[in-house]
Length: 113
Image (cartoon, rainbow, N blue to C red; front, side, top):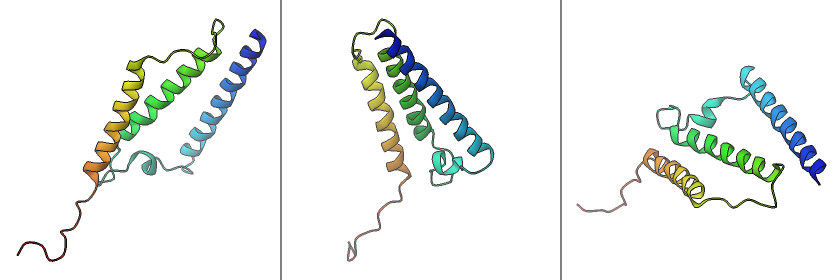
């Protein structure tokens, strides 16, 4: 069972590394435009809340995977409530930022005159 964990860990490490290298190559050769990924504000600026959600989700996901494939792991680890709270806060910050950036709704027809 230990050999299987090590093999799965290495395969995942190689896969994530190759995926990251491919993405970086496409960004470097301008095949992927980061403006559409991060620059989603009204002014076209980078969205800090979107970047935070992206990075924090990757960090938590890879940390969870590491804990599952660790040598002394016995099944799935218990995820602390604080980590889930931080994921929720990060997602909520993104939603609030999207709501703030959204254009206001036009006034209803035949409003107060």
